[in-house]
Length: 227
Image 1 (tube, rainbow, N blue to C red):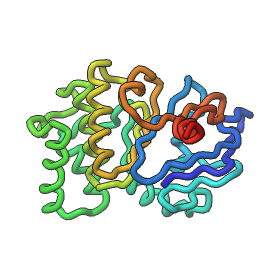
Image 2: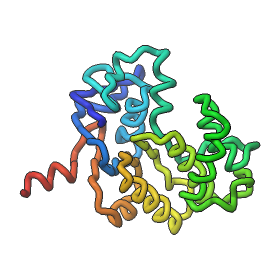
Image 3: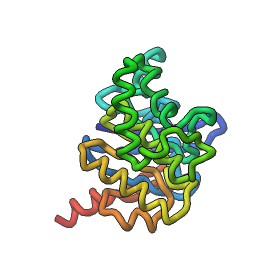
């Protein structure tokens, strides 16, 4: 579960990125977060990952109060979340297999377990034939699939996808979101930040809209009012 209670984030230059934000995302939900550039989407993600801390209010993720989290606990906390970035962030000199395996090796998973899980994950995202390819040998869509396999390999209960379709062709964007949709059906919570409204409209999920640091629309809330 993700919970923001009266959260305000102001940067040293005076920019108020988030202003008194309240939101709750329950386990198993698929939520799109949309808004124009500078609306506060990136700050929202940074707070969820404890890359930034709020000036006021409470941020909780998976039951942990991030504002009170000790610094030494942050890396372990982040490893419990699957993260997918717009720019893939794959290691250039590693194969697809090793890029996914790396997420397990840093947590001291046994080699036998790595050999079992990595091919399974790459097969899940449709890349079983590309395990030995390096990023430069893969298309943008394939690189994003490797990044998704890496995010999934530690069996997280939450995946945060930050503009995951931003650097791939439009026709491949649907495939990536559809894959996230299938992962969500397995019980994994998905939070996807995007500016692609056309893509959002193709999937029937909750949409949170942020503008100038405030939540101005929440489809779940609107639907509840109509009931």
